[in-house]
Length: 307
Ligand SMILES: Cc1cc2nc3c(=O)[nH]c(=O)nc-3n(C[C@H](O)[C@H](O)[C@H](O)COP(=O)(O)O)c2cc1C
Image (tube, rainbow, N blue to C red; front, side):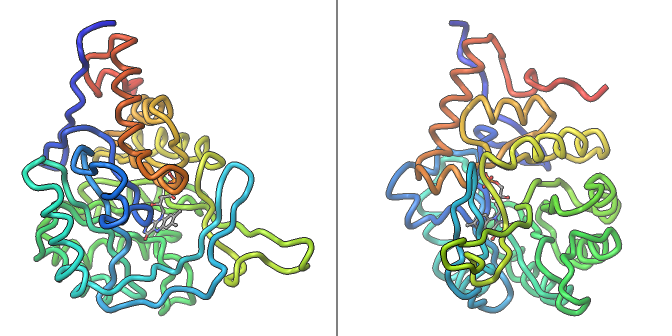
């Protein structure tokens, strides 16, 4: 066993105690905080928050699949005002002076709604904004903002104008070429990228001869999507100059190491937390062990390099 590796990372002008974050929508401070000390993570990312409350989709809105799960929650959330008044103070008090960062995931149905939410949240006590551009664009027939370089660029531009905090844009994998979207949002001032969001899929209940989800389609996450996510991270890191946060099916410290090898600056753990709530912290410990056993002194030394 070699010396203890140094897990700290720095990007977007911020330092992080380690490169393991929670993925949006799979972390709730009040619930997760009962199972493990999330102040020990590099950052926590909240569920999507919109300018006003959203109800979410009808149930059932979760379905298990082989090596993954489908969700069609529909971004249910109490809206930015209640998030700022009730959820954020709880998170801040919990993490205290640990140095864990708070990233708020931002949702909207159109560019104005994104701007409104971002304006409110940028003024609150958060460290970074993460723009979820997988939301359907209501004004343009429900196609996800992130599925089209023009719409992705526009929503980034609108939010960039009002956001002073570092802006992460979270990309959808439901596109032909993710690097095209990545470059479009980078050119409009995104400070970092996170990827991937869920892949669109469906399940059919053969006994009932009906779709399993009330919404018919949902987002596939978990181990099933890891190879897709890893490749998209690998390609995106090589297409842009801004840092990339990698996610998609990370279930172990070795999985996390693979994303860091692909060139991610940090990783996020999602579905694994729904199986085992303490997964993000366990994965961080496993990553440290992996690095120590193989003599990696720091996170950057894991990267394959971009040449
Ligand atoms: C139940 C659930 C809710 C999610 N909610 C959000 C969300 O509000 N905003 C967002 O950008 N991504 C959301 N995601 C996507 C995750 O943050 C992550 O990008 C995706 O699940 C891939 O990572 P994983 O395979 O580790 O879960 C959600 C995922 C799940 C499973």
